Structure formats: structure tokens, C-alpha cells
Length: 107
Image 1 (cartoon, rainbow, N blue to C red):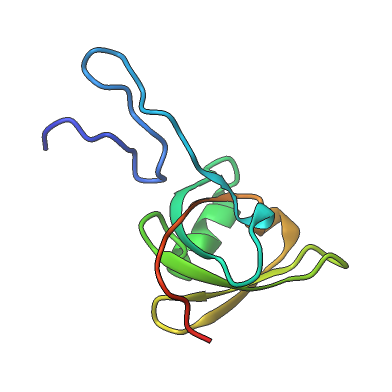
Image 2 (image 1 turned 180 degrees about the vertical axis):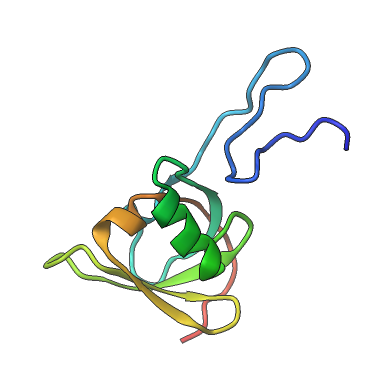
């Protein structure tokens, strides 16, 4: 199995020397419409949220395109790699950490 550098939820695991790589991820709720992002980790503090995200394929390693962020109710709508749309309420959007992924976005 070697020495993985991330746990299944995307949290970094210290190296054999005890060091951690810097974490440049930010909350999905802090993105902008049109942004292409990669899910880097998901919060594992709430089992029901974790189950929901996993059941919808919103797991570390998946690419998303942010389609809409509604300031009225904090809903973030994203499109996944398969073209499926997901509307996530504020608590869910704040439980997904992402990194910006360069590349073209589809419209």
C-alpha cells in the first residue's frame, strides 16, 4: 500500500519525516461562476453530509464547473465531469474544499 499522502476524504497525511505539503484548497462556497475546480477534500465531520456527497459522486479527485452561486440563499450549482448538475445548499458547499483547475470550461 506504500505511504499515501491523503486519506480517503482528501485530508493530507504527514510524510514519513512528519512534514505536510501546503494546502492551497478553499471552500466551494468561495468560488465564482464559471470557475473550473477540482475537489481536493470533503469534510468528514458530519456522516450524513459525507454519505450524501459520496452518493452523488462529489468526492476528492472529481472536477466541477461552478455554474451559479446564489447570494440570496448560498446555493452553489455545479456541473460534474459527467454533465450532471448538483445544487448544493450552503452547508454542503462549505463542506467541499477545492483547488482551481486550469483548462477550458464548457458552456
